[in-house]
Image (cartoon, rainbow, N blue to C red; front, side):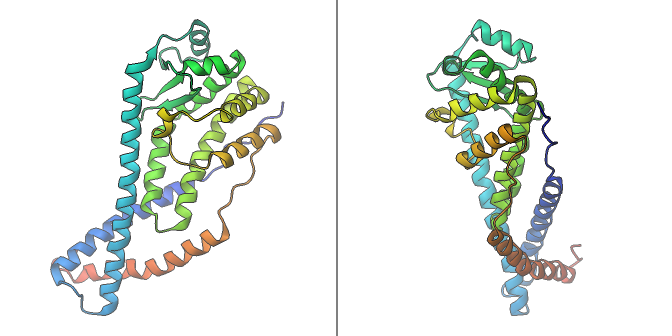
Length: 285
């Protein structure tokens, strides 16, 4: 069996995006100070428009990030309600599989006909599976699914993905930001699939994915899972397992052009806001 290629790198995006968010937040604070010190409107129409644009985009980013945070909290509470109410001892064979993968103390099992496995928790993540998973999949397929979730657990993917979604939400005024968030989620799934396939086999993991995809989604996990394009994600994951590498994912040209145009408008506004801070009492920079 050929080895999968290494994890594709988009590190530069996730280094640059938080920096942009911090700069934007700093400029928004300056914009508030400028309006507070000099009143509205500012001395010229350009200054007024530029500083207002900085504030408006920061407000949009803050609102979008708040929505993501609220949904994450709602998902966490949904799981916290589900687990105590439906928790069951793990079946013996599931305990054995978890122990073989070093997950014996990090596995929770809940009763339910829905078949699912999910990694949850931000600081000390755990793996949650349903008794329906044991009924739906063969032992080898369950082993592959657990190996996949172990990779999410090892890399604290719930925390990393939430951070990526928050940063992308701040840039909601850039059409490419949503694509970046979805791409980050898919990249984590592909990396976990590569790790699981290395120990359990590509065919076994692909069979498990297709079985789970054909089953109704669990309502209990709807709030806990980030929104995404499940069909496209499944297609990319199966392609990777069949061909050894996923389909190349690129944003639409229109998204790139629209994002570039937006940045071209925002850049002068950002520079104007920074320059205006120099005339504030005592200076701000």
